Image (cartoon, rainbow, N blue to C red):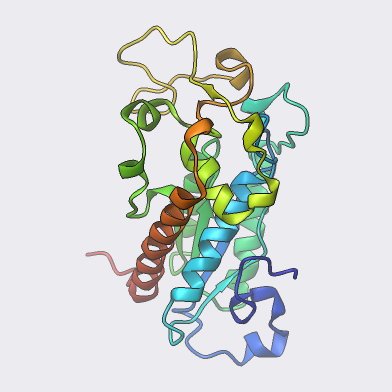
Length: 266
């Protein structure tokens, strides 16, 4: 099952070149590039978390999407820029330059095939800036190419309603939300008996934050011993199913809007 969570009829790589050559309405067809990472997620979660979340949420959304809307998922880009997790065994990290080039060259191929709408669906918090830079550069090079650098968790969804105030503020990695979602997506890969609660330590500022409006550069090993930043012990599969359903519905709305999007700016 190379398509993984993606419905096979929505999997770009299952098309033939003639399928693509003869496709109508390519200028409005939505192509989605799921992007994740292979990086540590504490003792209890596998390295594949971010990539699994991108593919799992997108697959659910595409299964709910109106079949008359043309939308296809590219194969998941599993590796990302994960150098903040340097020192934790198993993490695989690309440089910003390499990730930029991978996305840029993939997008150019999509453009050359006649498509004009591309979503970069990223689930790893260490690389949204790269998505935004490559999207702007591509649009500058190809003004009729609409690129959408989006973060999986930022579509309308109910996740924050299920978290404690402390978790909403500090649970940024391998905590309640990610663990619950993984219990829904890949339950056999989650080791809940090893789950811990560990919030970032050594934070001494009221204004500056790790991922807020006034961020500072940080490395995971500086703020966490286990690699967890959050409370994984309270995660449940039921919460995961609620999060998955909510995120998928949010992504259905996003894909619908991208399909209807007109790039004309006045």
